[in-house]
Length: 149
Image 1: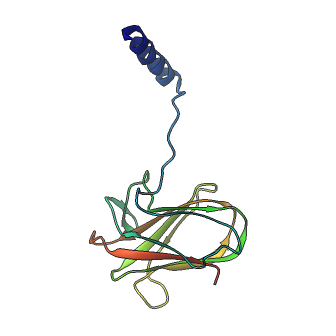
Image 2: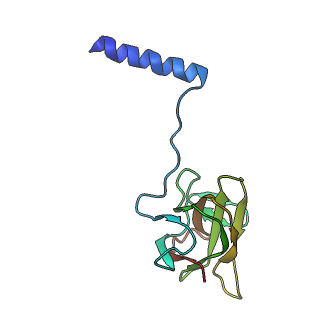
C-alpha cells in the first residue's frame, strides 16, 4: 500500500512538471440553476434564483462571486435570433456575463429607467457564465428570467 501511495505521488509530481494536470471546469454555485436551452424551450420564462454579490470587484458591475463559481451557467444548443435575460430584485443589482466560446464579457447595470439589469440580443450557440452582482455587498435575493419574449 505504501509503494502504491508513493507511486501515485511521483506520478502527480511528473504530471505537474510537464503541465498535464487536468483542470476542473467551473460549476454553477451549488444551489443555483444551470440551464440548457434551444429555441422553443419550455417553460418560458425559465427562472433562476440566488443572492447577489460576492467577493470579487468587477469594474462597472460591482461585486460578484469568484470566477470559478458563476451564479448560473447557460448552455445554448441552437442559435437564438432573440433572447432576453433580466433580473428582478429588491436591490440595485447587475448582470455580468461571459461567453466562454468568444471571451466576450457583458456587464449590464440599470435598464429601462430602473436599477435592474435587462439584456436582449441575438445569442449564438455557446456556454455563458452568469453572475448577479451588486455594488454594496448587501447580498440581495434575486430572480433571473430567461425568455424568448
